[in-house]
Image 1 (cartoon, rainbow, N blue to C red):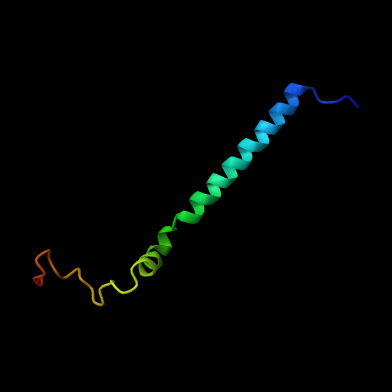
Image 2 (cartoon, rainbow, N blue to C red):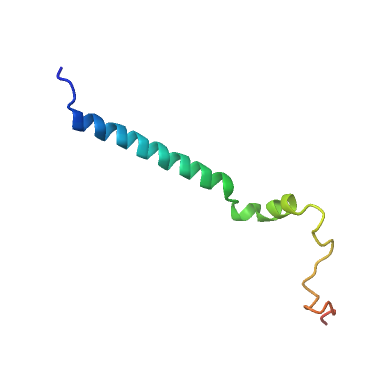
Amino acid sequence: MEKPNRNRRIFIIVFILFVSLFVYISYDMASRTTAPWNKPKQLDRALPGDLPKADTLGLDSLLNEVK
C-alpha cells in the first residue's frame, strides 16, 4: 500500500478541521437559540419577577383601559 502524498494529507487535515469548526459553530448556535414554542419559558427564565400577572392587551400605552 502506498503512502498518501503530502497534498492529500494536508487536504484531509484541513477537511477535518473545517468540519470540526462547522460542528462546533452549529452546536453553539443551537444552544443559544430558543425554539419558537419555548419563547414563553425563556422569558420566564430571563425575567422571573417582572412578568405581568394579568393580561395587558386590554390596556393602551397610557395604561387606560380599552373598551
